[in-house]
Image (cartoon, rainbow, N blue to C red; front, side, top):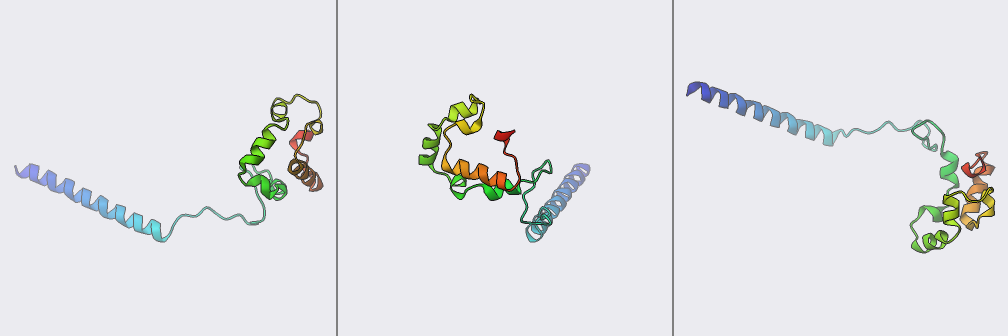
Length: 118
């Protein structure tokens, strides 16, 4: 019986020690949270593969980054499927929304060749 009591006592001690370590770790994590390293130049947007996406982020019109059901429905009737399946040889032959034309022109002005021009 005494061996059983010793084993139970050892298990309880280990559980209490684990609980204390867990609580200390939780408190330490709350006080000193882990942050990802901030980029050296916070004005730049770098993709995971190392390519610079700053021009893309700067050229994206604000209205395209906001959810808008009316705009989405309008654009879905705007040669959307033809664009998806790349039916026409020249991308500029599609019916383009003003914001899309603005975005493509901005990219070109910043020296970035849009994917549709490649």
